[in-house]
Length: 249
Length: 310
Image (cartoon, rainbow over all chains, first blue to last red; front, top):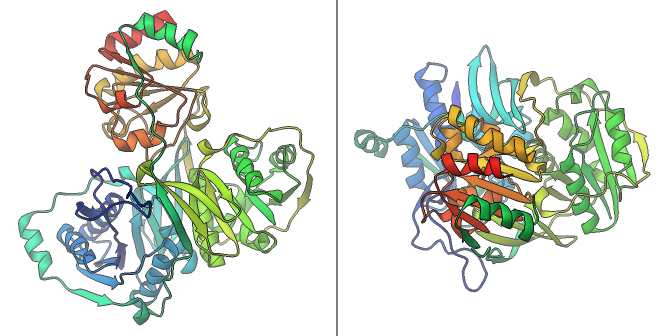
């Protein structure tokens, strides 16, 4: 069984982005870019499934600019066997990415697609569910545990108030939550090995997909600033302030 | 122009997030209908009909909806979607799970986590963990939206008198099966609906200490318990207590952060709280930059002292 793992190149999670002064977006020139952390968890999970012998091949996919090749090399250093880049300079929104992935699902016929529940740049939380709908596959989002056996996946999901477990038939789409696993550190020998692995490049046209954005960003602005308050010297003052000034207790 | 709000419910009652979502639909303008897809969910449908501002409730009942499986709920929404200009879900685990399936099948972009309605096609939403606010305009005929509940006041749960219309339930997809759940049962308010939240960080050091120090404070204040990602990752608190960019987004009247340094991802989840109190022994902790009241102290002495003083 093949596993397809879509990965997104995003601004590194340690970078605090700045809104551009002309309000057209955030400034991502010269900032560190990395693999979306949830997608890294997805790659790790796929590689562990391969190590357990449940999966025969792990294919990493990324959609976007040419530099996404670096993200794909990272995925292959973690343990993905090969990679596909759908290269375009156009802004890609989740629906467009889901359509590109659907075309690749048709082509590669994976038993599982595992991807992050959300990307930490646009915070959309859409792509996995959209892919599942377009490919008419069952889904298990926000996974914190995955077991694959007998043509089904048993997935524990993080839901409001606790956990829930679903059993879904394969092929299926799974999106990862934070606690699914802890991705391994990539080692230098594996980085070197990843450089030699196969990386195919397609254009959206090759897959017959229109990627034009559906949602227009009119402006991007700074959030309202919360001003720092005061330091209180002791618990008694704190309680007095909460009672008499803030009136919240 | 008519909006459809997909109700979050437990078959017996409507969950609070539905009320905030109705408010967002009211802000868009036009009529507001609510879909209750559930199993033996007559009581939930009747409760939805009471919500102020709702003019019609669609009630689809089937065993296939008992556990809110995304495949089945999305199919039910799609079965009635053609009558609506806007389809709104609360941005809860349930809403986020289903909405994109509906958007994809309608071939429309989805607008996630809106915090403000500027016009029927233009919305504001946070990006980059709330470090920027994007104003976005949908170019699609149908707008599929998830609503960040902290961005909208809840609609009144009573005062409405909508008609309840039964609609045919779609068939079970057969591809997904509910196996079970572990939902913590306690008397505390739900994290996203609580008026007061008491939240602990890595400084607590262990699950035992977390419970020993934070629980009495929560009990005293009738508060919900939250945690930073660091505390959850370390196993001091359950996963669903995590407040932050990728956990729960909360905006209570009072948020007390004890031993939380205040990573941007955590601040993204709580900085809209009305009053923020930070207790931390590190004077440089970033949490102090958003706190209304900062107490530089060791939480192991300050929190018990606070419990006594309340």
